[in-house]
Amino acid sequence: MSDVLVRIKRAILAGHFRFSRKALDEMDADGIAETDVVESIVNAVAIYKAIRSTSSWRKRHKEYLYIIESPNFEGLSIYTKGKLTREDSVDTYYFLISSKRAL
Image (cartoon, rainbow, N blue to C red):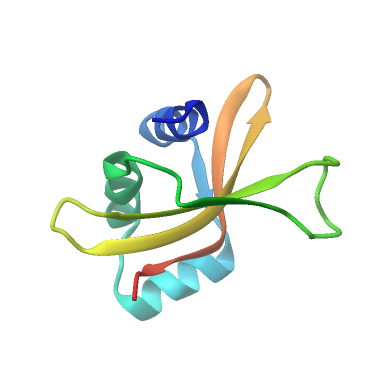
């Protein structure tokens, strides 16, 4: 398991995560609760893909978005995309782009 995935899981388990409005809207449309998304990240064995952010709003020169697809505790496969940031020496995971049922 990658160091980044371990850091993401620890942030999630400590309650250090946030959802964007877009992610919340997609979760609502798919009938997915925040707990489903948390369970999915906890169950993940790997990061599917890491891509560099092309957003002009990014704070750092190099910012990566992490794509994770993993089932929740009931077996529902959930696709998430987000970023890991550090605020006041605490890792926080932001579900920025999406959190939805995997196809």
